[in-house]
Picture (cartoon, rainbow, N blue to C red):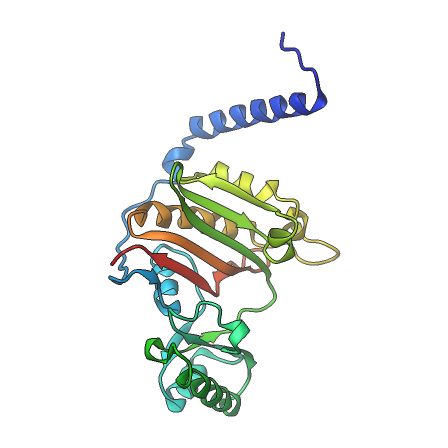
Length: 268
């Protein structure tokens, strides 16, 4: 008969026992087969350091992670035509691997509702970038569908020297930065792992639906974490770090979209 000398160790033992039985039932039910996926074709530019935003979003999309509609513009006319085809409102972001933190530099414009607003925003952003040190690395200005009415979360991959690819999930903002409310798992993960990751953060109640708000699409969130784990394993020799911030989780049955991402390549 096990003997425990504190409530804390008893709690840890109960949690470990429950985990063991749940994971055993998961594999008995064929859960390992359910998460198997076919090889994905992908392309990572032969460069060391951060990728461009469009390159990052295209890589996420190739692994089944949903991203907003969008395209790169290099002129006012291209920007206006893209905005018309995407549908208003739109978001505009400067795409440059040398400018990963665009918001602080005024290189992101949100909630643009007309060709007139798109034209003004394009001219302003282009003028700002043309005088910056990163002007030679500007890929263009991304015109992107604006995703609204969701809950912002973050997820990412970090290569640990001992553990390999590690997957992170949290609600972002103050929850991650101040309260340290996030979960971690070593890749690859399965359906059971991602369910645990989502449920164990303190902010899970917000995803369930809080104070009259609709519950978030947890199933889409689980799928995104699984796909990100697949990406982590497939690119473990090429990528050292990946951050999706934010991923917007829409209300139930409406999906989840990665609207911004930073991917760091180790290739040279």
